[in-house]
Amino acid sequence: MLGPDPRVIADDIWAKLLWAGLNIEPEDLPTSLNSLRYPLELLRALSLTWLFSGLRSNEIVRLRVGCVRWQHDGFPIPGDSDEVLARDAVCLLDVPTHKTGTSFTKPVDPLLGKAIETWQNLRPQQPRMLDRKTNEHIDLLFATRARRVANTYLNGTIIPALCRKAGVPTADIRGNITSHRARSTIASQLYNAKEPMTLFELQAWLGHRSPESTQHYAKITPNTLAKAYNDAGYFARNIRTIEVLVDRDAVTSGAAVAGAPWQYYDMGHGYCTYTFFEQCQHRSMACARCDFYTPKAWSKGQLLEAKDNLQRMLTSILLTDDERAAVDDGQAALDQLLKRLVDVPTPAGATPREIGAPATATLLPILAITKRRHDE
Image (tube, rainbow, N blue to C red):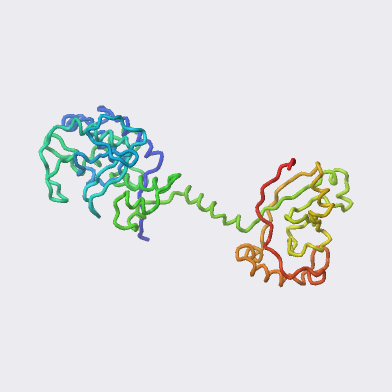
């Protein structure tokens, strides 16, 4: 009963948290110590990093000064450039050495890059601090008054403040909203997007060493699973659509009651007037000499197509196991089906052997068709 089960935050709650992070104000944060210790620009950059980067809390607080870079059309944009960033400029975030691998670079939303640069421009000069992961002395991005932001600051202060701002509880049915749950939520949304990231692309974006780790974070939503199920066509592969022509004159005049043909199943090469066409075991395989068959090349078939009173409809025909095998497997399966039906009577009464039907035939033409216009 144990297995990967990412604790994804519901889309509606996550959307409210995103709004809160983008609109955070000084009154939304505790004022006893934090307003004096951490500037608003730092807190806004820290909040957006949690909401947009998909990083672990340890990676967030260990980001370094200059971790944001920009590029446009594949070319880097210098950090001291006076040019206005293009709308399609890509923001790159340098992630330090982390839990499962070395440092790497990932694209992030430009909103995050601008928030980090805003804080970076206002950040006072700080002494270099020890990176406990690499034992290097570096310039930490989230530091002020010679103090670094603690790993627990996200869970203890930032996330509760965003929940109050968004009007959502700090816990849901899956437990408390913590810093790591944002990583699962972002990964699942990227994996279920309209233009989704592949598993290997998501692996690179999350910085995982193995795709098996990525599967722990990327959870397929029921909507995505339902769409994939519909696209697979489990039911559609068992049916085929055929066009039916209904002779309205024959119906309204009463000729249909007297036994005159009134519906014609379009099989491509001709029309079948057998009322219970879907029950015929020889559908389009022994039609040439059947009394219910009208070739299109014959004058009667041409006169039928010239009628103005025809109503064109589509009907679904359920395929048998043998017919589906003939469609899926090809000519060999179709030849076997023909051999089994050689002595089965047609709707006209005679068997294919008696009427001298050919021993071979083409694949079933009962396929999905495009409805033609009347003027064609």
